[in-house]
Image (cartoon, rainbow, N blue to C red; front, top):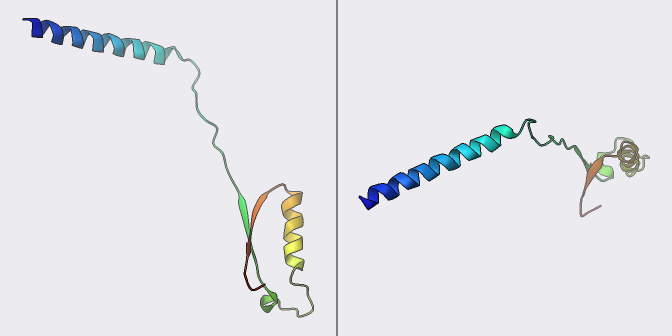
Length: 85
């Protein structure tokens, strides 16, 4: 008989806790959600003079131009450097 009473009491507590939880969940009127972040990361591989079609062009010309554009538009950028340059 005591076991039945304990089981009934445990079920009653569980139901009451569930009702209280649902009550507080529905009390929140405004939906809460995080703002979705969007990221852009510009990746710039820095190559040597072997890919330059114009032999007289400075290999760093493109890198300097890309750096100016990144700074101008306030972007984050990653520069991939080769060890042999």
